Length: 303
Image (cartoon, rainbow, N blue to C red; front, side, top):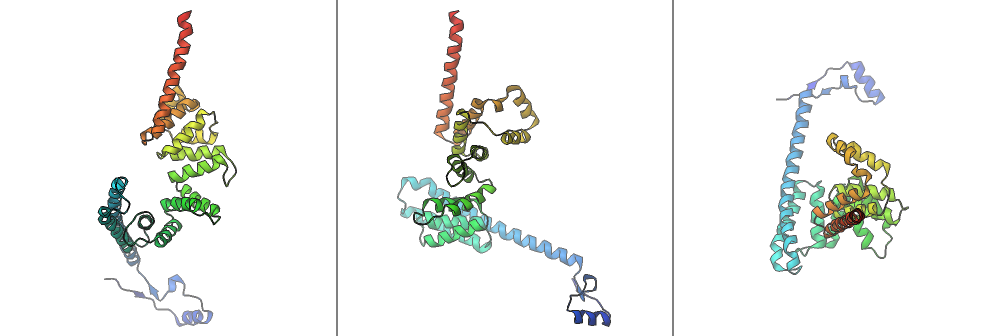
């Protein structure tokens, strides 16, 4: 059992402290908490926060699973099909329970906002969805920041919201959100709202491609085939992150110095992500290589 230790102070110290209005020095405080009590309180708080977050994530997982089932079949039925209502209700209830368990959980806010704004769930309200989306974005959720930036850019025809959209997109880019990286790369590539910067666009496409974004991989590979020079900072960044075995292989084959090989690697990323355009680009490059080999071997055959 923990008890508070009281300290007996001289009357002169008490009188001087009362006269000046200053707090007691830590060493002379009339109530001193034991170190073991402070440690116990900290551990208890951490356990409570962990338990609360764990419970919220369990609810989010259940809601997300129900929502994914809706996404799996929604293309084959009407948006307001009655057969989807039980799944949508399950998702909504679980996301709301997650917020009750942990009101600071940004994932629950984001997914609940999507339910209100995108799906025909009973009790849906776009105003509530928009408020939840803004809250999640301001609390630092990268998915919410990216979606809010896209909606501010696309859906506001009567309000100049490009700067606000760019603000949230940049916030998501700071957390390396692949969709935001791709969008910011496109903005730098076209010079829309910002000064045109090919090097920054390549960096954004490269980082998004590393996270498996098909569109960014296609854009990066296409720019490489057009002869765009890769910034030195990007090549140094790759060499520092690569392992010793990979660096040895690079020194022998030098794929980083060959834009065609780099482009093929990017199109391979897109193809593995299920993008048909990536497969078409790989086939086209393979056909072009065969044609060049045939042309180079034909003079030797004639001679």
